[in-house]
Length: 421
Image (cartoon, rainbow, N blue to C red):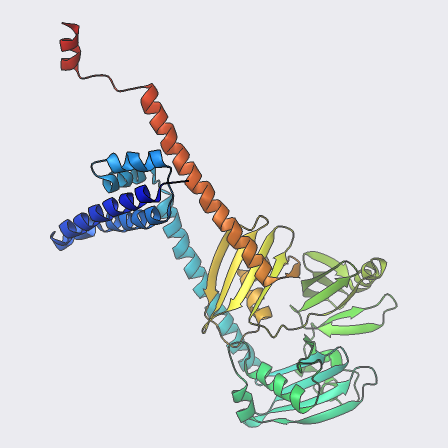
């Protein structure tokens, strides 16, 4: 066990050396202080690390014997630093620029969508049994209509006031999401002990064959007001199961696994599911052969979640104060990228999709995983990496020390001459 007395003496010695360096630095002209700013910051980091390290007794004694321990360590650090520092600086600039660009693009896209459609509108599948149609009307209120999915009969209708919508807006709910939550409550569609609901957005044209729906009327008299690129999902008998908007996400459920995949409209009979192109009947047959089913991906009403992305990446997302934090990891739980999105009113599903799109991972499958467990594994891996780095530095210093013993520096010429007399 390391001698804590030696460690304390070493810390006190180096703290005194740093105080002396700080006092000297404060007496210098401002221009000279700037020249030594990096050195001062690194020395502070060295002092902090010395306070946490438990060096072997022989190494602690060796450092104590140095006339200026702090200067010695800083000199070693200076030799080990390479041009990677500028790579980190460059990457930081590029990452922040890319993040801000993405956020701006998202906000512009939302604004353009609202302006092009005039009013907000969506259809949701609630608890796999009801279809909820929401449409913004004059003054910012929302009208809603509920239909039974099996019988296609209207079961409820009403209006959500703008005041109720505004009361429901928070970091994870925009106007449409707040109106949806209010309509679900007013229509009595909550399920489960906590009053929650399984909610997934589907295509507007999902209500095209419902006799009493506004969508059916518009499909006859105003077809231009409806999207032409909703994606159909059928069974192998060509019976329609549901539709999602172009760019929507499905959740695929097999007996042994569940994952989500982004979909992209090609034509009325073909679609991308993740990175693969399928005929809609072919996809139905693939599912049935494997004992699987699919449905529109439910929207998570959560402030933190995690997914395995494809086979070799993980993503964790968590809501902060006015922003979203995210972390990407490789298959060994090494962090590869992190950042924050300063967007509000987005569901965690939408934030996930933004991050994946920015990192060109949007076509990979997304398997839900436990957020807490992922963060624990990532923290353990980060600690392991820090320990490995520390061992590497100590190994290099030990190798230098051994090399110095094996190859001592030659004596000065004058001393050699005196020794030969």
